[in-house]
Image (cartoon, rainbow, N blue to C red; front, side, top):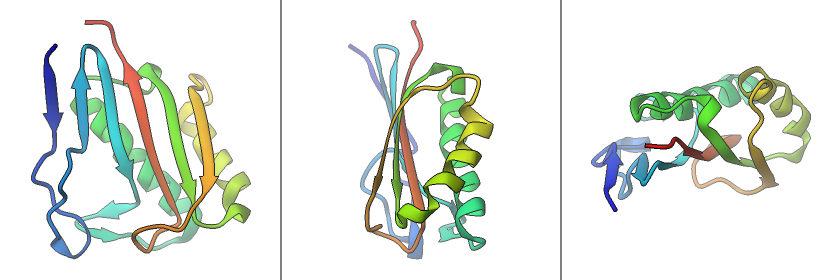
Length: 127
């Protein structure tokens, strides 16, 4: 089995080195690490709408870097800081995945950084 890592040696908030890959591919499966609304090492402002879009777009950028698309996503995990953001998040989410809905879990969780949402995914593409 061949394993390929994407984005090792990246930095996160406060320019701290991240001890994990942004994504790992093995036998056609791509596991994308949790993405937040981070840009240039800082969480963007703008509330749940802006953060949802940015987190999803960060995840999609990693998919594309690895040669995958949203149509290849089989599962998404979502963590929301505030459960009252659930319906707003769903509206944004549907803009990206409405035509290709993967399996999904969504839970409320306290975040490790000052953000409102985090998303990760697993994608598959036959090699």
